Every structure is written in structure tokens, then in C-alpha cells.
Length: 589
Figure 1 (cartoon, rainbow, N blue to C red):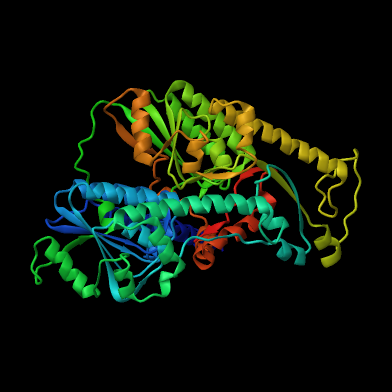
Figure 2 (figure 1 turned 135 degrees about the vertical axis):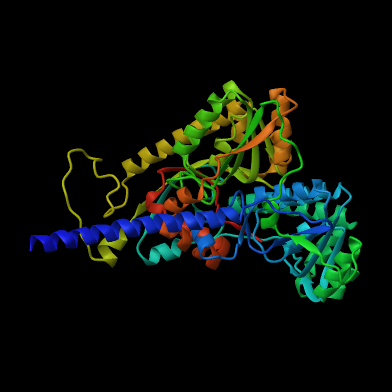
């Protein structure tokens, strides 16, 4: 019997060891296959870069291991990859032009503007941009308007109707299940809490939202007017006619597009643009191909480095921080910034901020590290779609702040919230909680009762103190009297163009503008640009992939912009007690 158990255990152990070895070999094989797919792309002469945008744009993105293993169709694109690919297409002599195919994709206003500026820069090379679409979304048309020729399908349409902004209000939903959210805030315009306590926008929130939506629309119409040789007045008249439902030839007659073609005719037209005959093969490059095209620009040998550090997403919204997670972990960020501060080869840092804010505590910790970094080397902030509330908090200590005209920034205000589950617990669920305490406020936060007057006063005082600290940090960073700063604070959201007039930002421009400013502040002409945090390898990313990441991506795909409202509800019990955040669930369309 002993021998039987001995051989049985040995067999089981052998199977486990063998299974583990095969698992390692399998993972290594998959990693090898994926690595082989990232080899340098060969560019043929007379090639065309096909920029096909149909999904959504993130600050940085690379496909997750699950996406790669399941061969999921990519629906998210990295803004950094798009900008870099357009720049590589400009400098590569074998690429003759860009074929822009834009459909229904989701992109923030500032990111949209950055892509359009990259395309405008591409045109300076003398190469062509041809845009084609069956149904241009409004964002897609904004990009397409920079093209040399806009082609529309004879049965197609161009969406052009103006911008609107909506917010999802959940107060009545919470009330149905017996939840009341107790709010404490400073700032008349601090509207992030309104979806939890109201059923519509407050007058102050409507005022600020109308102002920044109008500012974004004015920028869009101004850019399109210049490219299409129209006036803003003409574009507004067309928007009032809701061009989405107008026939395709009406878009031609009104100057929104140049000609009507079916897709097969467009292919022939592209060939003619580069001198090919109809039977000749047209070599095309996708965005995935362009990511693996080597740049012609030789690496600078000066040893100088300008670091671009990407900080995007809600502050302290994730326990880790990688390419695809929309969240800034303050502990991770301050550790990374400290390493950049101590690296003597790094002569300046561009902090790329794309954040609606979040934890007041986390924002303060990052602010401290930015201030320490600034004492050692220049720090330039480049703002993306958002750099508001906590996003502005972590930016305000920089030497120089660059924002896109359509960036949403400011929102210098603070709030706290404490959910009251007493109705849910005692009336809906018929649960009862009882206990003892040693001091009168020891049970603050007891879910079976709302806050009392003394507790509310304590929390409001804490919020007031947080606001004073926030405004002081901003006033010091911007070298502005605190009284003047408070006049433009109050939680109000501004666009980048408005913020420049108010001296909350220094310059309007994109990431390249910020890099130029960084070199000037560091007094260097030659340098290499290195992006941080550096991408993780396949195995590390695979081990860190959480099962809920895929589920979250499906929620976003199903509910679109409104998925953020559901995420707010999900994380309500985990949120920091003091928040510096804009109403990030706002949907602008």
C-alpha cells in the first residue's frame, strides 16, 4: 500500500510539473508570436497611409494580452500613436499621402484638435490628404475638413448640427433604493455632485457649461471656416438646417464636401494621385503598420533627454498604472517623478495631464512632487482633453502650462460626499443596527443613520480647509494674488482659450509646443524625447490583467459616454472623502 501511495503521489507531482512547464512554454510561444508581429514594417514606394478611425481615442494605448490572444478587433487608438504615425508619414519619402477614413468615433475636443494639427503639419510637406466617408460624424468631419479633398459617398451624409452637452442624473434612482448622498462643497460652479442630488443642471452649471461648449464650437467652426473657405456664419446656418438629414449633393452645393464618389472610384482616384495605373497595386499602411515604421530622424547623441510623463485618468482611481488603465495612482506617480528628478540625464520634464481630477489627498501628494521636481529642472505641463480640478491641482506648480484651446481646465473647487443608507437599511431591507460607543462622534458614518448637525459642520469645515489649500497652491503656482485667484475659482470650468485670458495657462498649443518650451527653459537645442511610464512587457501585462478589465471595456462599449456615470456609482463607497473633480460624466456631442 505504501508503494501505491508513493507512485500515485509521484504521478500527480509529475503531472503538475509537466503542466506548469507546458504553460510556461505556451505563454513564451504566444509572447514570441506577438513579438514577431511587432517587427519593423517595410514601406514600399508610392505607399498611402490609411488612417481609419472608427473607435475611440485614448491618451496612450496598446492592445491587452486578452485582446491579442482572442484577436479582438481594435476599437481604441492611442493619441500618441496617431500623432507619431502622422509625423513618420510626413518624413518618409516613400509615403505619398494620407487616406483619411473617419466614421463614428469618440474623441475628446482637445485630442481631436491635436490630431487635426498633426494633419495640418503633414500637409506642409506637400503631400496630399484625401478624406472619404459614407457617414461623417461631426468630429470626423472636423478632422476631414483639413484634407485637400473631401469625398462623400453619393448616398452618404455629413453630420453637422452643433454641440450639445448632457449629464446623467441619478438622484431619483438612488432614492428608489433608499440612498441619500450628503454633500459638502465649496464653489458655486462645483457641479460634479449635481447628478447625485438633483434632476437637472443648476443655473450656475448651465451658465458655465454653455460658456465652454460655445467656446469649443467657436474653435471648431473657425478652424473649418479657414480650411473650407467658408465663414462661421455660413457654418452656423448649415448647422441650424441639421445637415445630417440633407442629401449628399446638398453638402457639395454648400461647400462642406468637394465631390461624390463610390469607394471603388476613390481607389482609382488615389492611384491617379500618385501616378499609378488602374491595374497597378496600391500599397497601403494601416495605423498598426505605421507604429512599427522606423523614424528617419537619427537619434541625437547629446545625451540630453526631455521626459514626457503621461498622467491620465481619475486621480487614485486604480491600484496600478499602465498603458490602458484610465487612472492615476498618486503613489506610483510620485515615485516615478522622483526618479526623473534624480536622473541627471533628464534636462526637463513635460507632464502630460489628461485628468478630470479625483482625490484631493492624492492631488496634493503629486503637487508636492511636481514642486520638488521643478526645483531641480524645468517642468512644463501639456494639457489634453481635461486638466481640471485635481488635474489643474497637479499642474499649477509647473514653470509653464500649455493647453489646447478646447482643453477643459480650471474647476478650482472641492467637495465631499457621505452616502446615507439609513432608508435602504431600515425601511427597504428591514435591517436594524445597534451598538455602543465611548465618545459622542465615535460612530460617525454609521450607515443606519444620517449625519447630525455637528458632524455635518465638521465635514464642511474640512472641505473649507481643503479649498483654502487648493486655492493657495494655485495662487502660488501662478504667481497671482489669492484674492484674484478666488475670483476665477469657485469650481468654474474654463476652456484653454478662456484660461489663457485668465492667466491660468501660459500658452495655447499641443504636446510639440510643450516640448519646444521645455527645451527653451532647459536651454538646450539637441535632445531625445523619452516617454514615461515605459510600456510593460507582454508577460508582466498578462499577469496584471484583471478579469474586470474586460467587463469594464464591454460596459463602456455598450453605454458609451454615459458609462462613466455608472462607474461613479460603482466607486461611490471607495471614493476619497474630499474630491477635486469636474462633472466628468458630462457628454458633449
